[in-house]
Length: 215
Image (cartoon, rainbow, N blue to C red; front, side):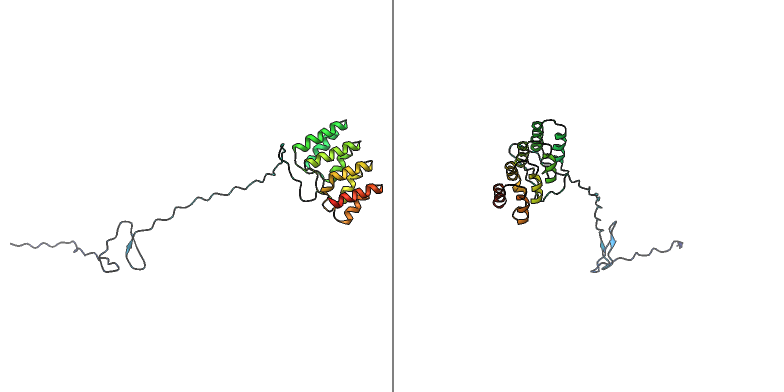
């Protein structure tokens, strides 16, 4: 006797097969995605790792200092210094105020100028020279600053104001000899006339004119 049993379960449906580009059965791999262009299963491409952004730190500019040694010297500025207040000038002026004798003031100029590179302007030179009573000491000051390249560029008129701090023409010639290379407009007639006007005798005027023309 045959008994027929009916099943309440619906018949299983065959899953549709996915066909690739060339009609072959393509089974998806775990994690695969389907390309929107040709229907093939492709492996997902790894994403680039995010890079950490580092905020750039601002750079602090440090003004270089110039120290002297026995073999190194510092050149003077290529721009004329018209204003006062240089650090070397301030040190020299302070030392002169605190010294009673000109010899001590000369030593202060020597010590300051050999340890610091800061060309002294014409206005500050005039102020410094007024602390000295003897022309010879004033010449020493100018020569010391010249040797350490601490005389700033100046005009002929400014040079004349320095020369006039001296009492005698002979010492004024020595002063001009110390600063003449710092007179940047010395080849101009107006500058030359301003300098020679600081001399009283014709011989000294001719010597001053010769320095201005040949240096």
